[in-house]
Amino acid sequence: MKIIAIRSSPRGKNSNTLKLLDAALDGVAAAGAEAEVIDVAKLKLKYCAACNACHKTGVCPIKDDFNGSLEKLLAADGIIWSSPNYMTNVSAQLKTLFDRSPRVTHEQLFEGKYAFSLTTAGSRDVGFVLDVMNNFMKMCGGTVIGGVGCTMAQGPLAMEAAIGKSYEMGRDLVEAIREKRSYPDQDALHHAWREGFRHVIIANKEEWPHNVDHWIAKGWL
Ligand SMILES: Cc1cc2nc3c(=O)[nH]c(=O)nc-3n(C[C@H](O)[C@H](O)[C@H](O)COP(=O)(O)O)c2cc1C
Image (cartoon, rainbow, N blue to C red; front, side, top):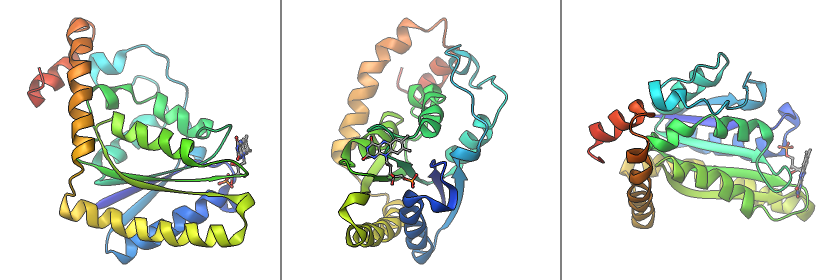
C-alpha cells in the first residue's frame, strides 16, 4: 500500500499545516503503511495552457514536474491533500496542480483511491478550503473519508486537538483502503457525474480521442 502526502505551503518547516500533515503521516506509519511526501511548493509547475493535448494523447506536453508527480499520484492507493487557507481557497501552488489535471477528471483516474484533506487558517472557517480539496478528489472519481482543519486564532488547544484528529485520520485512511470501505453517497455522486459528462465526451469524440478510448475501455460509453 502506498500513500502520497501533498504539501503546498511555501513556509517550509515553519508551516502550521505541516504540523497536521506530520501527525497524519505518524498515523499512516502506525497503521503499517508507507507514505511519500510531495512538496508542491518546491515543484516547477507552469499553468495549464488549456491546449487539450492531454485529452488527445493522454500526456501533458508541458516540460516541468507535473507528469512525474501525476505518475506518483496514479500509483498511490491513498492521498492526503494539505494546504493553508489562502484567500478562502487552497494555495496557488496546489491550485496550479489541480488545474493541470483535467484528464484526471475526464477519465476519473482517482477511481478506487481514498483521500482526506488538511488545512489551517489564520482567523476564518476552514470548511471551504477542505471542500475545495475534497471536491477535487471526488470530481476525479476518488473517495473522501474526511478532513481536518484548524483556525490558528482559536489557540494552541485547538491545534492540539486538530493534530490528534489528523493522526487518527491517517490511521483511518489505511483502514479504509484495507477494507475497501464503501461510501454509497459518493458512489452515487460518481455515477451521476459520469452520466452527465458522457454527453460532453460524445460531443468531443473527434477532439478528445484519448478520453474516448478510456471511456470505451471502462465500459462507460
Ligand atoms: C497569502 C495569504 C492568504 C491568506 N488568506 C487567509 C484567509 O483568507 N483566511 C484566513 O483565515 N487566513 C488566511 N491566511 C493565513 C493562513 O491561512 C494561516 O496563517 C495558515 O495557518 C498558514 O499555513 P502554513 O503555515 O501552513 O502556510 C492567509 C495567509 C497568506 C500568506
